[in-house]
Amino acid sequence: MTDWVHAGTSILPAFLASLVEFVEALTVVLAIGIVRGWRSALAGTGLALAVLLVLVAVLGPALQNIPLDWIQLIIGVLLLLFGMRWLRKAILRAAGVIALHDEQAVFASETRLLSESRQTLASGWDTVALVAAFKIVMLEGIEVVFIVVAIGAASGQLLSACIGAGVALIAVVLLGLALHKPLALIPENALKFAVGVMLCAFGSFWTGEGIGIQWPGEDWSLPALVVGFLIVAGLAVAFCRRRRQHTLLSSVK
Picture 1 (cartoon, one colour):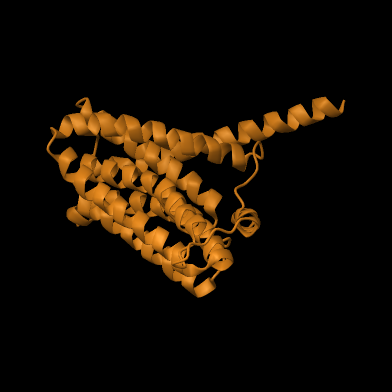
Picture 2 (tube, helix red, strand yellow):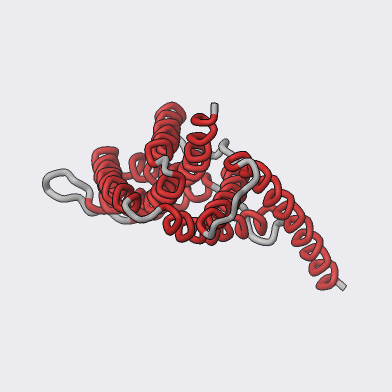
């Protein structure tokens, strides 16, 4: 039971964070494939995934050679900062301060831009499609690699973190094949809110372990940290929403 709980602390955040990034990448890849053709779109995607796998294979074992307390401290601080960035945007979106992320709008925008330029080599490879697919998968994938390697190194469960990211990738690919359109039905903004809360909680946990804090219940203290960050984030949403409404009323007067 303890082993499953320990592995779950790596699998779940890696899965959720990867799911968000893969959905964003899939939206653009689908637009590229539909407008410019699937050959170059899939080639660019496959090349980017290969590069990302090499990064995980190199960085993961390299980090595990560093003393665990240093890894937990460094990775914990980075995850906390990374999570706070995600959570800040999620709070502002939930409060209506900034616009919600709309995958349908992104899909329509990318489709229009890709339709405007055509550059195909004599071999049949579309360089615009190839580069665009490679770029978006690398861009979103770098964040996945960082989260997977960070979680795996700090928890000593690199394989579990990779499994979480791999399951997310397979799920998004299968849904993309089945629906053949942007995964707008997935509540991406809610997912980003949840991921931001989880990364902040895990970052705090590992930062504490890195500086020698003995958490009560060890891994079982993580749910309490998640609930704590969730409550604070919920209060922040309410505060931002109230302040926004007050600003709007003041501007009307």
